[in-house]
Length: 277
Image 1 (cartoon, helix red, strand yellow):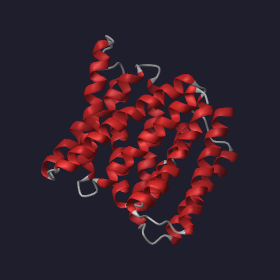
Image 2 (cartoon, rainbow, N blue to C red; image 1 turned 180 degrees about the vertical axis):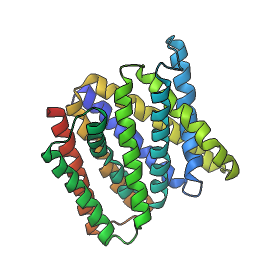
Image 3 (cartoon, helix red, strand yellow; image 1 turned 45 degrees about the vertical axis):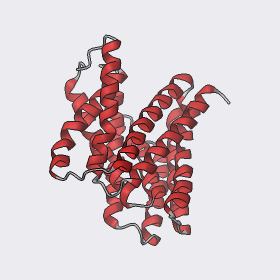
Image 4 (tube, rainbow, N blue to C red; image 1 turned 120 degrees about the vertical axis):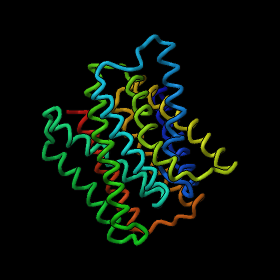
């Protein structure tokens, strides 16, 4: 097993841990959890930038702020679905973001999706219809929130790609948290729910798991070709199904399994085609 594969497997595991503890904090507002999740990366990124003598304020501030806004929207809505929806469904819906990213690239980079990519898109969305049509635990509102979260993430990914011509990757990461904190802080202050001792322990785990997940993901993409490691991210769905079953006693109906499978197949095929194109 190559280092890149090991790194991406570690990354998916740490992000799965983050998902579990976000769901364990379902009694706290998702905005509050998002704020705590962003504080540690904000501090660490700033320290790393200063030590590397990189200007943390960046060159293309409008794009950096825009990336932060859409990243924050995606994060807030994703955490909300994690808390309100069965774990596997919430995680899988987020995997629609590469498909949205491909479609949006047609407007930003004039890289229009081929007919075969539209077919992959339809496969994934047929999975959404299967999940909604038969799983009574998921309301239309929750489903819409999950889709909007993936859409916001897809927009953010395209902005990140645009930013590679202007700023260092660490600056982009720093701005994500720099925008998230002031955006959610006013709401958190007026809707504050005081975490108990166990909650603070979970919050620390979320921060550490997030940092580890991002670190190993970066190492994976540096060590291997993207095509070799990108699709291994979908192992996160397996973690979500297992953790959801054993930790939260979430028993998925057969239609949910079929829907999840369709979403993953469509997304994997879309990613593979994109890398070969």
